[in-house]
Image (cartoon, rainbow, N blue to C red; front, top):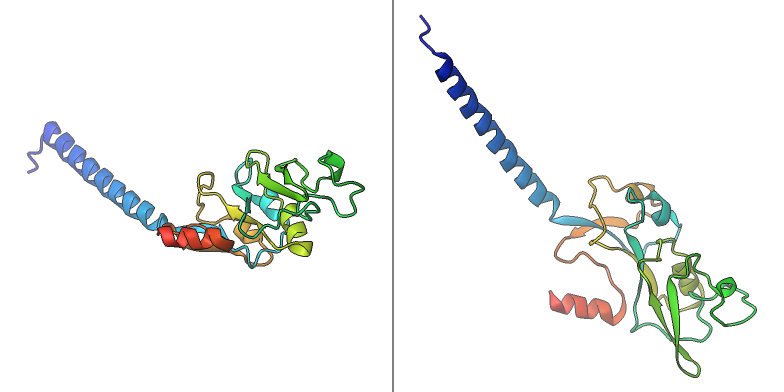
Length: 190
């Protein structure tokens, strides 16, 4: 005969539910820590600037942004990453700028040198400046996934649509693939 009271049944149910919840939490934490070991990154040496980073991110504003390697930059007056090809003048007028959002800021240093800075808030990750810089310049502009913005999706929608397979998982301790002296300093810090 079953002498189990309602109180015993509820106690055993709560114990079972608590055990399952704790097991589920432990599984979640282990799964989360395993997922955090690797993050998505764009290899600038493989990227073909197809402009899909700007439109295929699951976020309303892409986590991909343009990065500038100052150590590689020539600080040119005629910057092919800043100026539209065939621009009639070399001024900062919107009609002369290659960037559709005006995310690249140009500051005069001394004749004939200019400094170029990326305003991340305006950058949409389209890669037009990167393509221009690589075509006629030294490649000091390149795209990177910014990890303060990226959700680190299991299935990155940009990676799935990347025609050159430039996206890969990299260790979270070294989440950036940089160029120039910036890359050397970054590796030395680790």
